[in-house]
Image 1 (cartoon, rainbow, N blue to C red):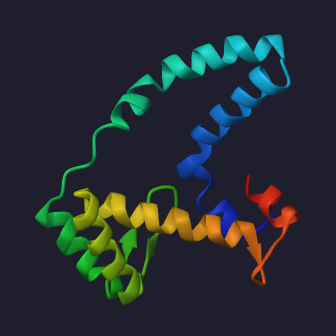
Image 2 (tube, rainbow, N blue to C red; image 1 turned 120 degrees about the vertical axis):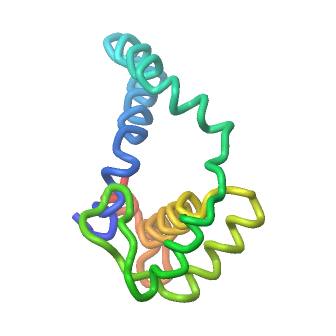
Amino acid sequence: MYMWCVAGASLWGPYKNIWTTVENALRRRQPEAVHVLDLLLKKHKPDFISLFKNPAKSPQQHEMIQKASTEGIAIKGQQGTRLLPEALIKETFILSDLFNIGEVAAVELLLAGESRDLCVTSGGRWDPQVFAACR
């Protein structure tokens, strides 16, 4: 298993479980998966509703991200803190301003995208084995 794929696993783990259950219920037509899907949809209803609400921007988040290149930042789903490169911090502020979302949400989106990019490429080429390990 690739460590850079596992790093984001706990952040997206519940949603990967929903995806697997949807596949089992709809594509594989497993009868027990329909019941599990119903339970998961009820359990995660607040998450689905919150998809329509962007996390608000705040001066505290802005300052925290600004200092992340020297002090580091705790990323949801990962242990400890992580130093962020200046380029990522600049991209975070651009994304935050562009979509009017909180800086922490913006950095999580960028890191998730970075992780997914690593999962689908290997030396600049599509690698199905790497992609499968990340799913």
